[in-house]
Image (cartoon, rainbow, N blue to C red; front, side):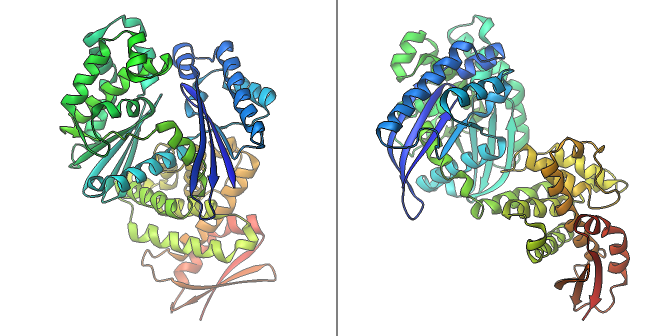
Amino acid sequence: MLVTSLHIGASSVSLLIADRSEDGSINPIDFLEQPAPLAHDIFGRGVIAAATIERIVAIVHGFQKTLSELGLPTTDLTRACATNVLTEAANHEPFLLRIQVACGLRLQIIDDGEMTRLIYLKTQRRLLDTPALRKGCTLVIHVGPGNTRALMFRNGEIARYTSYRLGTHRTREAIQESQAEGTALLEVIRQHASGNLEQIRIDYEKDNIEALLIIGYEVQLIAPSLGKAGTPCSVRQLRQLTQQAAALSDYDLVHRFNLDYHTAEALLPAMEIAIAATEILRLTHLYIPHSEYEQGLLHDLLISKNLIGTFEKEVLRATHILAQRYHSDPRHGDHVSRLSLHLFEQLQDLHQLGPHEALLLQCAAILHEVGSYISPRLHHKHSLYIILNSEIFGLNRLDITLVALIARYHRHAMPLPEHPHYGDLTMEDRIRVCKLASILRVADALERTHHQRVNNIIVTRENGKMTLTLHGVNDATVERLAMQSKSDLFTQTFGLEVRIELN
């Protein structure tokens, strides 16, 4: 089956036409790419210029002509996405409207959650290609146009994820007025990035990083100039190449590395950030993939949303790491998570939510008591604050907001429209919060003792009541008392009184 993915990126518009095999593998057939100065406009002016918008419209029209000649849909693409830096443009909504009107495409902006999934997919390929990276502690740094993300892997599994407001185009536009050239320009770049680079050092200096992998659109373009694919290059090699590049005119830079002018503008920041990151981690070598970044991104867009299985494990692992950071009782959080998931599955026909909501419920259950790190008093509100101001690998901002609210409502007041954050949600998302928080409250009541003594539960429903029959529990007085105060949201949401029976 033929599939198509289109990406309006920071400095180019690209299209991949591929064949999806029965086993789900993606085999590229054709790849098209044209330059467009989107990030240059956004970080330099705060808006997308009319000329840039029309250039992108023209590029997309050209791609659609190619699709039409191949007998493929021109508007119903498998994926049609735009870079996440688009949201920083004051006129990003008129831009999206223009693309929809002119090209018939509803673009999806790649959010933080999907961006981390895409980085994860790229990293997994590199871990497979380079056995040295699968052992010990490897840090993967993705240098994007507006932000830099760091993923730490221990023996092939994610151990930590952080992000920084540091990017190639963001840096280039910020230093544009310096008028510096050559090695002086490299020093200006380093000084501009120093705060974020220092934070990377603080975040990872105690982790004994053994290998560093740098990925990104610009930096991967110069990888063939640094040596053989799959082998590390030295910081010295990269520094020499960077100094050579800094001495070139824009014209010579474009021809030396086969770039367009907009990509060339961001090349030196990408190279200097890579050098600085390697040095602050006290490493002498780094890995830069030789693979084509943009084509790989389009490939991954076609499979990113089908990662609920393998990727779910990474999300939950990141959630556990966050819970550990705030010294939340792991046995209690995990047990409430298991009970919540059991109730979720038993009540599927009642709530009619899917696997993604089940994942959000588990995350909220694991994190529902992190607020006790600040104070046991009103810890549900402290949990809301902590989760809202944290990042969970693989979850976007809306997901994190939902998790934070579900955790916030695990006790005390029920959701009200005037509550901060809850009142900002759509009606559909408010309903999701109420359904999931009501299940969490019931599960938390069953784990009131923090001794994990409730395990085997039979759920039955009849005559306006939901009966939870507990096996292996001799006395459920504590659980019944807790249920009296915690089942109110469940009753309000689903219209069922909750009762506990023993067997």
